[in-house]
Length: 130
Image 1: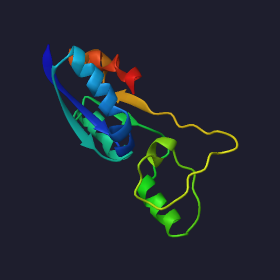
Image 2: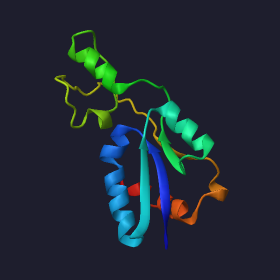
Image 3: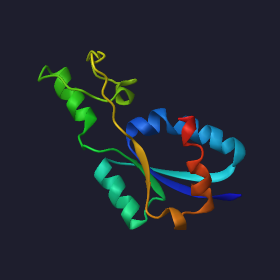
């Protein structure tokens, strides 16, 4: 099987989840190519609706995590950010665990699962390898 999967993603998922997902997926489907489009959540949602990407990772509550970290580094306050974005950051900030854990939900969105290509449908089975 061969084909192309176009994925809309934001940087923390592209850095920490997709390499593992794609690595395992490629072992079973070596002839699938990928096009990754990095953007913010609004752009990714638009790309899905327009059909520019086959699927895209999204979350609720849109903020630019890197702008927030830059402000924290400058001493302008504190923030609660997802653990995934705090891996390998270039900012001089301190990450601390919350007393009461908080979670964000990240999902993969499709314009229409019924009309998704076979490659995309197979790719969905590999999300567990994140």
